Image (tube, rainbow, N blue to C red; front, top):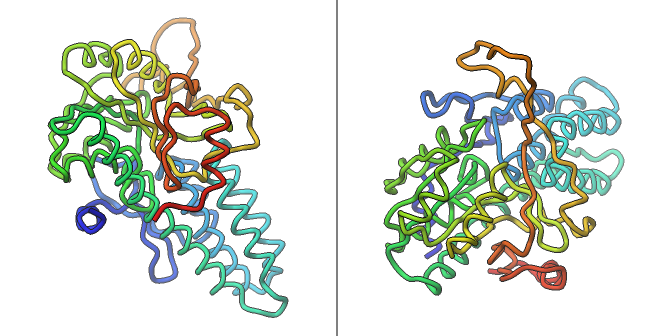
Length: 358
């Protein structure tokens, strides 16, 4: 199956070539496919902060290449590259302050810097590390897709109708995607009749990105408003809710795209199985539960303007980026290390002790 998945990689969001990082500008999709060229770490941080790229894994990969650009630039300018890199690490960290994957990657790159001997050229070592992070994510996507497809096949067989939410495809990763990767794989195996994609307000990732990716793969897809999820589960024969995650805590709680929690509650009520697909790098065993995570808020202007005009009235807006889905609402978490059904602290601890699946 792996070869079939590789052959189906139709969407690419990131490219490292000619000593620069090329990023598909997601702000312009689906109307225009335009690539940003990042020549410095600050360019990368700006792309992340201004939502030209999205998705936990992709943000981390961008930061890894940003570190390479930082070192190359500072060596060329004759500066103390170690000190300058630390300053750029800070800027990259601030570009997405609640991204667990970003901080995991920055720590990994920092550790690699620590192993560079004085007087050695650090660029080849850091570039190899960034490439390894990128390729590892791509391989993890393929592994998760196969595991997710096996679960769908085992539970319900063919003719699946699947609901998904958020930006979880190739545009959010270094490869095939997480939740969308599972849907892609299941479609290749003849097990997807139709995918329903919520619009994912206020950023409209589903309307702009998820539907665009699935349609490129020829997968029958229907866009729906976020508020229609319960009606669709009741009337359209949804068999699986498949989503990604931004962070997973030690007990299996999931911090995900805003709206995930209400979808999980609705899925449980309608008997729809709920699958979370995410790399193990976002599992934070230092956080006991999701209640320890501070939920970030987006700019209120996203909700207080329509077609660029401020809505009338004396009121403000509450615009959270994500929400917390308790572990007891989740049927299965799929990672590249394996799957965890009915997750809890003991099962997550066992998962994190494993080596990666092959």
